[in-house]
Length: 69
Image 1: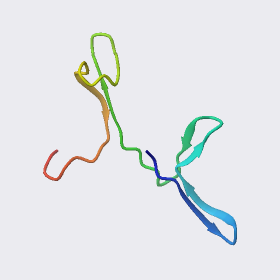
Image 2 (image 1 turned 60 degrees about the vertical axis):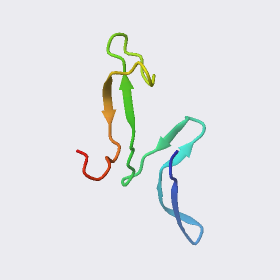
Image 3 (image 1 turned 90 degrees about the vertical axis):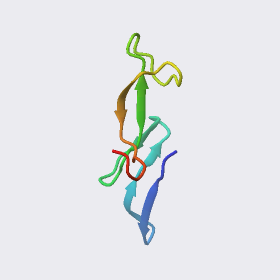
């Protein structure tokens, strides 16, 4: 899921962030764009995104619950 923000004044785009580019299959990141994601991996063969086999976090930029660090 992503949030695309587009600001227009008199029909002219003055601000955009998170725009989906369907031709290149990517999200254009603006200056205020923030990506929250977690990528898990199994160390033995580097398989990613397997719920039961992953035993290592490659990246975790999610917002933790209150009190958890």
